[in-house]
Length: 210
Image 1 (cartoon, helix red, strand yellow):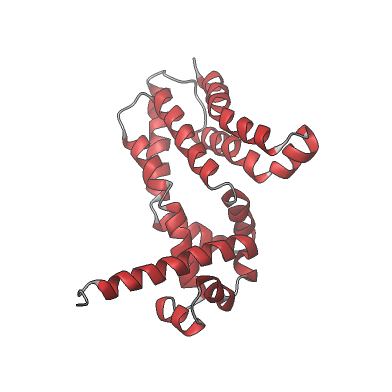
Image 2 (cartoon, helix red, strand yellow):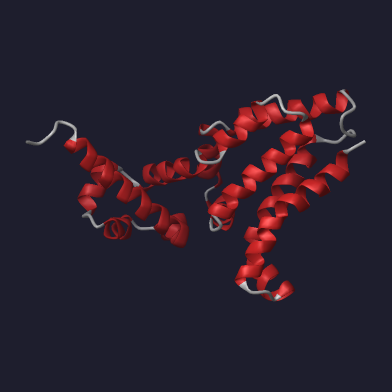
C-alpha cells in the first residue's frame, strides 16, 4: 500500500537532485555559461520536469545560492548575537567562517566572478538571508568595544574588510599562492589553510588591542 507521503518524498528527492546538479553546473560554468538542459541532464531528468520545479534559471540560481548562504549566515549571526567578549566573538567568527570556506573551497572564486557579472543577483541573495542586520549588529559591537576601551579606535568597515579578506583571499588566489609563490603540494597548502584560523586571529588581535 502506498503511503500518502511517498509522493512528497519522491518530489523532495527529485528537487535535491536538481539542486545538487545545479550547484555543480553553476560553479563550473558560472551564471552565463550554465544551461538548464545541462542541469537537467546532470540531474537525470528531462528539461520539462526541471521547469516544473524551477520556472527559469534565475529562480534556480537564487535557490542554490540561498542554500549555500544559509549554511554560513545563521552560524555567524549566532556568534554575533552571543554575549561573548569582543575578542572571543572575533575568534569564533573567524573560526566559523574558515570552517565554511574549508568545506566549500570553490565558492570564493565563484562568488567573486559572479559579483563582477551579476552583482545584483549575488547581493540580493545575501540580503535575503539576513546579511545586512548581521553586519549592522557587528558594527555596533565594534563601536561599543571602542567606547568601552576594549579595542583601539578603528573604522568598523576596515576591521570587517580585514577579517573577511584575510579569510577569503587564500582560497581565491590559491593558484598563485600554491603554484607560483610557494610551490607546495596540495596537502601542504591545505594545512596552511587550516593554520589561517590562528594566524588571522593573532594579526587582528594585535592590530586592535590597546
